Length: 217
Image: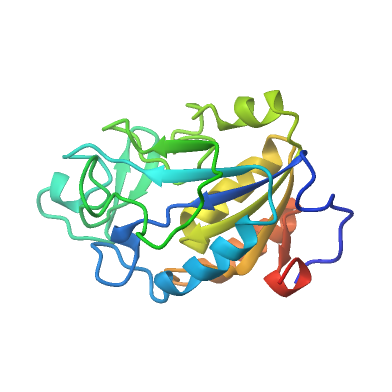
């Protein structure tokens, strides 16, 4: 894990827990299941009780989204294509707006969450990050929300560690937030070494990697 940083207590009003994409399609049995994705739900619920500020990010794609393999004849899930903003990994259709797969996991219990940020809503641009879409120019508005609330420290949990969680963590650091990733409250896809790449990139960017035991039981 990363070296210790001076982070404020979890219940400090300057801190927020950001819960990334704990949705049915990323849970075993879903269209883009992350192995063990359901295992983190009880831990996230426990961690959240220690935070005053909780934000949920939710993948929310229109039908025919550019990131879906079904939108590119002749291509299959996990192929890569070039879109106007660069390389795009293609995925099975998932988290379609209003569908069961897009709903938050039924056991996710975060009654005091103050904001749900929906991402991937633009049909032509993917959005792994809860902060900035994949064109790296279009903000979701989360940075402004957190800064207006006086929040300067974020802890991230959720799915998948090596994609949406990692991109969100890197963008949080780029926006100037002190950022910690709670590794055991995440699960990864690990496609072609993506997990180790993501962990290395986050550490290099100054994201603190930690386990929940270092926080609160």
